[in-house]
Length: 327
Image 1 (cartoon, rainbow, N blue to C red):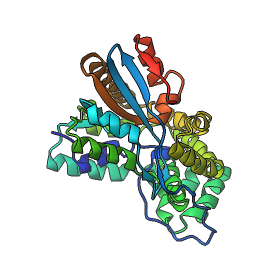
Image 2 (image 1 turned 120 degrees about the vertical axis):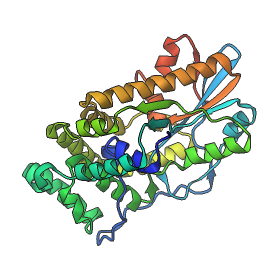
Image 3 (image 1 turned 90 degrees about the vertical axis):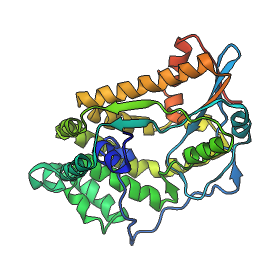
Image 4 (image 1 turned 30 degrees about the vertical axis):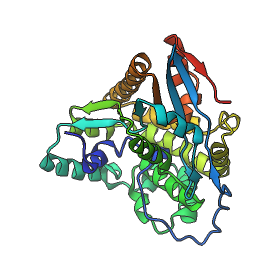
């Protein structure tokens, strides 16, 4: 069966470590709000990368998170591609598991028990005094009412705090661009083909993630807090750069370092490392299938997966495909 929203929460909430975070309530803060971004009007976002295999083309739209909450986004180039496309590969995969309703409920409560520190330890007891003070200063600034964060595992506490600060800055972590693209695909009767990933033992995966070394979680938290202190202004600038298609401004970023630290923590779990590898392979197989069999395909992927060294473009070039950069 396709994983329901309940099962996705239990199986993959811990996957979204650090900057990807779980949601929390919007705080009321006595600190001055961050200056909100000034992106206005209808904006195109970045141009499309094109991967070619003779007469067949795979177009890549790079998405960014966070983006402005009220972004008015419309890409005429993308609309023209979808008008003739035979396939859309969206950013969300098709995750499945053999989980019935009763097991899903059990997994949900298992996940809830894993959100906090073992042995009911507080965050203050787990962190060094210096790191806890850094966290608490930022929590008082962005989420003073969210005292439950003081019991969370370090990586989840930092991730929830990041979400609070992002929302306070006029940005949103929701992928409204991907939803817009899927809606356009439906309007044009373009089949949506999702990379597939199956989780055979969700509980064992959760149990393994629970054993991530606390030192790795703390490294992720430190990287996230450092980014929170220094990167919100850059996050707004990146949102503006994405909205107007300024790809050069997106190539230099502190985001990759923080995400790499947090992924490294997660991938100490062999099961999670295998799932990440399997999903990457499933995405690449879907892209290659499109390049070998469809005249025109559109794929939506995080823009840093396109821009990073040894990312998607490097892998496709290594397979002999030609890549054209956006103008």
